[in-house]
Amino acid sequence: MDLQIFVQNVESRCKALGILPTVACRESGVGNSFLSMVKAGSAPSILKAQKLATYLGVTTSDLLGEKQNGPGAVSDAEAALNQEIISRLVQLSPEELEKVDAFVQGLLAAR
Image 1: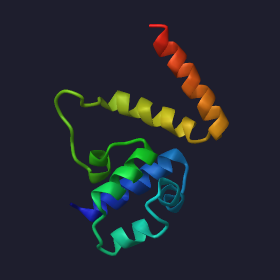
Image 2: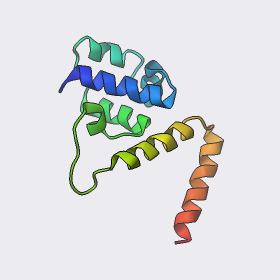
Image 3: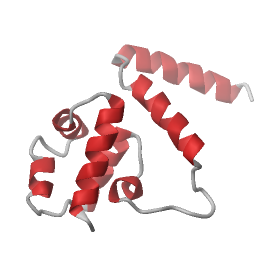
């Protein structure tokens, strides 16, 4: 695992979402000093990398800088759209997120 790439990907994703990396680490449950420890050379556990990736709306592979090909791979256009949607969602309050979730569930049920 290239720790520098991991840190760069976390910081880049946070910047795209308009949040501080320390806030993302705290709110994802990995701890305020998580990135500092990784920068110092401590490899993150898979669980913590997954928690942070989930919070940031990406896969663990994305944070690790792994390239995905084949079935399930997301195009650059789809990835950009996903990032845009996530950047908007993280700005919503918990009550607003509940309304969005209910709306999406309604759309899916109407199929």
